[in-house]
Length: 164
Image (cartoon, rainbow, N blue to C red; front, top):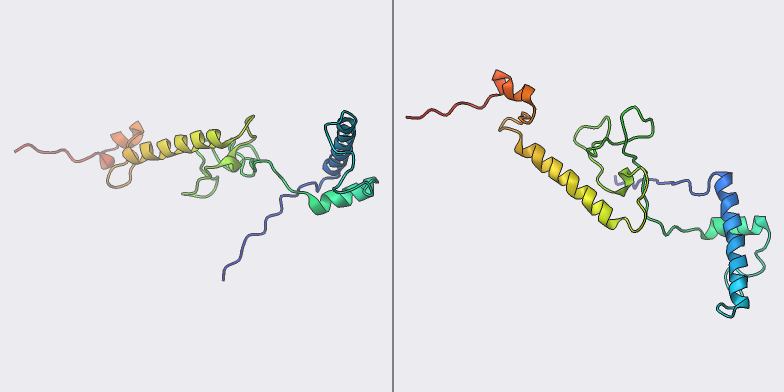
């Protein structure tokens, strides 16, 4: 059975967010009206139209037509283990899940200014380098040789090659 995940980002679920969206909508109308007076914008509003004017009508319009144009991020926040909102550590490892990493913008606690693509590439390269480095420091038994503890434990030493 193949069940797709249910994702509800809770956009505008908080009444404060919706109130702010209504204020932005009304402010945009004011700006557009000023641009029309200057002759750089159409005078008539085509969408949603002048009949959508009360807060309740604007709220309904926003709820029915809302879409995002931002870059989704911060859904799996990177942070310290004692941060209750953190999902991954600084090496992109998911807390409580062995062998799983999140290497995309969802692990950013916030987005940097501008388009995030180059930042995401840099982050992915850093994690890839860490993984390759970790692999290079493991012996044939999977023991980590990068820490002095593992290296100096007799059980983990590599066999000495004998010269004949």
